[in-house]
Length: 85
Image (cartoon, rainbow, N blue to C red; front, side):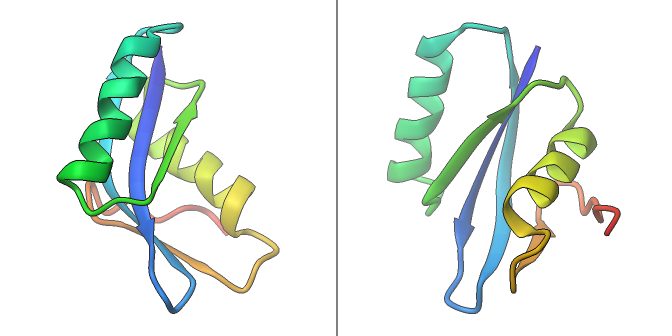
């Protein structure tokens, strides 16, 4: 199981998570559909998959990979998860 997070980078260097979907490993069609949806409807410019079936773990991984050690912030508008810093 994978979690796909969708989001957008704001001008103040904040990654805002606006969507979250769980998909089966290797389901490239589902990933492609989410990327298209993000571009067309969700005002998202960021999509990333994480090797977990839990939203909170995916948000934590996003924080560790893209935010930690950067001058940036992460906001989870889906579930309000606050990553451990």
